[in-house]
Image (tube, rainbow, N blue to C red; front, top):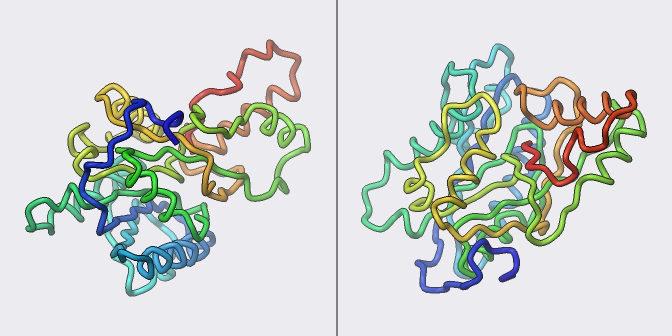
Length: 264
């Protein structure tokens, strides 16, 4: 895995991860949120049953919801509310809530912060993969996604996406749907910014600038929705719409970089 780390030196002298906090920002997601949470339950059970066991807390942040998203959240899931209409604020509030309750010294060094999106479904080994990267010396894990069907798009969009999306070790994509980092490193870089989009790209850039060891890997990709009505102006749906425009209009192929940092 060394070729996927931003620093070629592999450290294994960090504290082992004994706890994981997963934050899911939600804005009007009553239709897709149940599948997201069901997938997270499976991934959480896998690491809870591992040796050594890792305790997992899932935090859902309901941000300016006007639908019944709150009804589909299970009682065992921590639920917060805010009215920021900002995916960056929602992620930040979730991790801040987890941090405020901690009183044990050294909790940050033993805690992994992970985040995904309400329109996405993590694979069963998702947290296993994140924590394996941490055990191998990574401070952060930047993963990939796989589109969950193309029913809403012409085949040209699917073809263009496949041509441009290179999911290999050391890839250059960034997705809030598949992102994690050690809690102490998260605090050191200042956490998520209060942005309405590209908050994931922003924090990864700060992680790299800080010298954090970032594992960029295609292992355990997260299935994410290809809906047209995305929840941010700079998310995955926006990127797909750009591909559709490019497919319809003769244009310079450099208009959309093939290996750009595509968020969500």
